[in-house]
Image 1 (cartoon, rainbow, N blue to C red):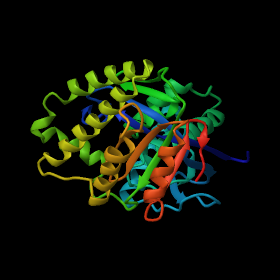
Image 2: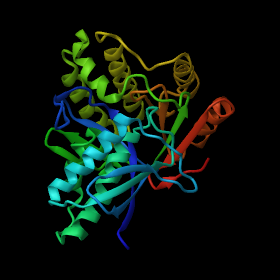
Image 3: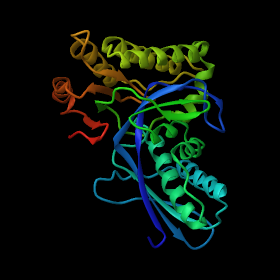
Length: 326
């Protein structure tokens, strides 16, 4: 390949969140999380061997890619992960690393997860070839990626992943789902996810939080396996409100929800959930945007979302197999 390696990795959306860390350096979570892999929302990375000893980051250009410009801190973090991977392989050569998303970054769509997963995948391939060592498997790569971004370890497994203090792995749950997100804000977040993890431990509501998340994860997995959609829906709703309550009660307090977020949530509760057994699972990450997981056959609900919000906001869809249109 003439010293150029390319690859990509998907984002993921957690329905049971991890919030807070037992090991900030190693990104080890205080509780298990359960995520759905968003195969259609990906970060693309290109790695090129270059002369010298200093790595550099550049934006990746191409059709269908959203141009990004990492902050100085963002570049340093990305290149620090590449340096960590090079140390793992004992490689001293330099690389130009280029990256871009095919979806908006820094707005609650887990671009950090897909970015670090993609970098780990491509760098592992390049470093294995450069050193003659065998490439690592998915679980080993997930553990390496976790060191750069905790939630990135979930992006190595599809369609569902569970992550705990011992690592991430896939888990068998119903997968015939379509992800839909209403992007009410696509700018950079004022409080990063990493900073949020540090702040939430100051909330009086953090006491008991890991136990609540663990109980919900077991209950949600059971509800999905037994096709108890109504219970699954309520568990996801309770979970993301629990997380956002931590933000609002931290010291100092902060928040991601906007008037537009609340409008979408109200629409989901009052319009999409009229039938107790139907309507999408709803969640929010550390951002203002609202995520839905629809059963694949529920086209009417997806169209309702497009009809209500498509003229004002970007509405993104992806299925477990990739893009689902729009």
